[in-house]
Length: 136
Image (cartoon, rainbow, N blue to C red; front, top):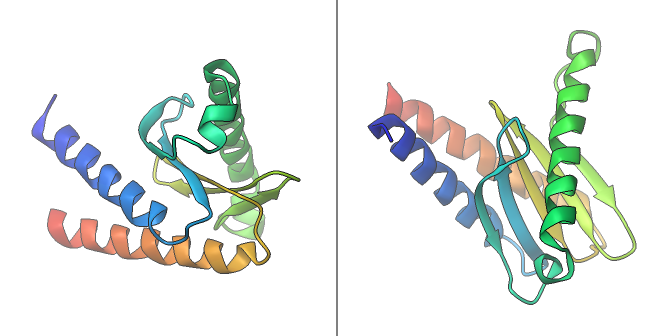
């Protein structure tokens, strides 16, 4: 593992921790690579991670990555996707494109998911700004 890879992984770990701490409804935060594989993940033991078998979790993560990839098709016409919110009966899920990764956040159902989406977006923006400052 190169020093750059190690620093990138530590940076992604910090991002996961920051996002997971913004709301007590958050049950899982994962950063996925382009193949849908987990690069970093924080999950509550008693939450959705327990209820979802590994194979289904892997399929769900691949779905988020595929959706992010498909969303780039219309970037020229409508601009880049800032984030997605998926609301189901038992969970709310958020996804954000971060360079060549996808950040996935799964929470218990929320009354105002847009507020959480905005807070996550702020953390991502501040994290990216800090990363640019450190690397240049």
